[in-house]
Length: 312
Image 1 (cartoon, rainbow, N blue to C red):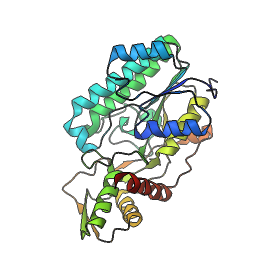
Image 2 (cartoon, rainbow, N blue to C red):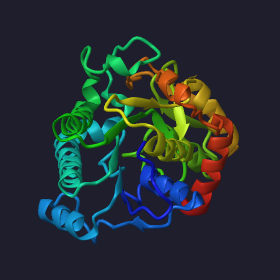
Image 3 (cartoon, one colour):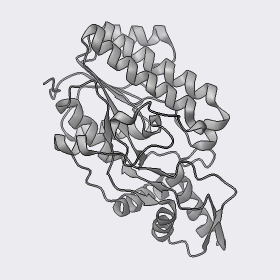
Image 4 (cartoon, rainbow, N blue to C red):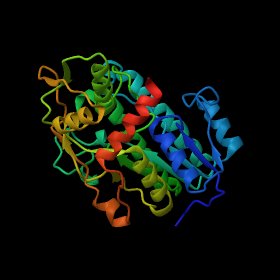
């Protein structure tokens, strides 16, 4: 088992994002203090030479690949070229140079959107590539699938130890609350918050509210990532989620209550619901001895506090 030591040199790519920042918090809380962190200004991950030079100079022992270009349905639909180019380039540069410089272990973060659109539920790891992807985020999903196969191929050909995690929908501090780019939870939180302040009578939400989604607090994902970096050595992908889901309607009611918005929710049924249900099977993760600890209610309340502090 290839476990990190407290003084191991650890590179977290994308340390300012939702996921990367949570991984840094989790590592520091557990006493890992030899972290290599570079802002976009210091290291452009799209620049092949810059990434090569960085790995040659720093020689990190462990790599958390949490850097990615992410966004909601709208962003994916309007900028597919940006999503496929940025994600393929970032992960290719990092994975290849991690191999060249003999990184002990790399953890690649995929996404639950890699799975087929109409998957049996809950989604088992082996359902990958069994049928068509969701068209709206195909560019992103294909880039992530390429990343998984790249990790597996390097393990097979070069004997590297590159593992791939597939997290479910994430939320928490440092999320993107920009309405054109945000995912469902931060977008709703902001809409209800602004409607409360402006005393608006109703808030319009996309779809019917009947679609079901699973949500994992990003601090839980970070703890799972550190756990799996230390405990999991296998090319097979592994799902990270809660194994529990809610309807978008239930989610909206929870957020509305936390925000204290008193108007009504109007469902805009001319807008798409996306996939009817997306729940990950987390049997494998639970069998390894890890389970999430932040409930959805607590997580929403905590995220709203963060939002108010940081977006007022």
